[in-house]
Image 1: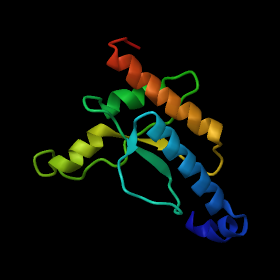
Image 2 (image 1 turned 135 degrees about the vertical axis):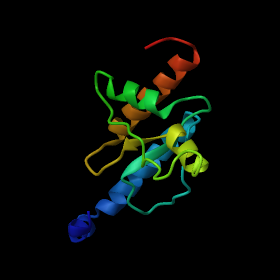
Image 3 (image 1 turned 180 degrees about the horizontal axis):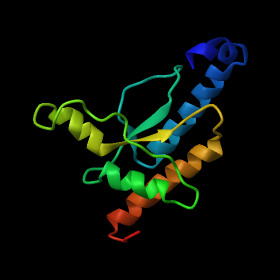
Length: 131
């Protein structure tokens, strides 16, 4: 990104990305989900750092998202550098959040699909339906 800042600025892509971020935040909020950080626009967000409902495993959700017919590249953010005893909070965040892609080539429809897919996985697992 840093080597392309002039291109991003000249083409007003920061404003477009901020609009996409705001759309994504509204979709998440409408469905009862939140992001795991207090970040405000305008800024560049490389992903949506989504906090999962209590009891959900980020590993399981990521696997289910990438296994969809129209796969979503859901991932962990960063693996903590220390062990669980030394860094319990970092591990708690690691295990309870997923990163969903959010880039300049995405549309509102892409975000809608991704959030709906995540909510579908959460809903099916809440109801005890195996995938």
